[in-house]
Length: 252
Image: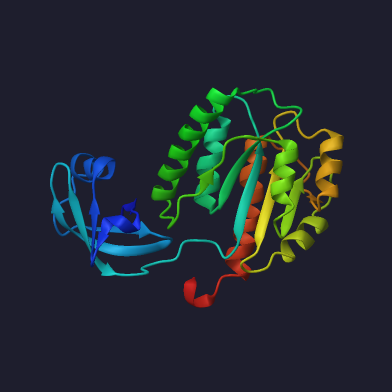
């Protein structure tokens, strides 16, 4: 079943009115017909709908069941990702959104090879946000996670200090006991930051600053992971813990 996002202004009574790219996708790509079912996510809630109109520039979806499903995690995960080379950021965003991340914050770190000027930051962020929306649709999220404009390391730590927990996977950390203890400290409805270094890894001073900001240094295992693998693994660990231990049984 396909999922679309709508704002509250597009809802009139018991019907969502879909236009633009969504309408084109429904009619010309998916070739949906009247009576077909679809999901419409609005203001963080998923609604099961039936397609009642499907014109060239307008589609209407009548609500069959409100609050149809809850696919969001019982915690909010903030991924602070050191800017990687090439198109790795696109992969990281796609998979992190699928795993349930709440927000992605690209971070400029000392060992980042990529350096973006203000113009490129804006264009890249727009591209990344489009990828986040596409991934949210595919994974049937009820919200589209925000991808922020890249920030400096100091700005990232200021944001992280406001969270309940900051996890810092670091290749020099060995043993999974600290990781297990950190995951066990995650509470329902809490905010969890994950700080991932770029291809060259963290500088020691960056780890020290993260520790001073309240970060908990953890291990992701005995192997050295690429930055994109580390991000996906860390988010996946938090997702699995939250799904298994913090979600109400009636929401499983």
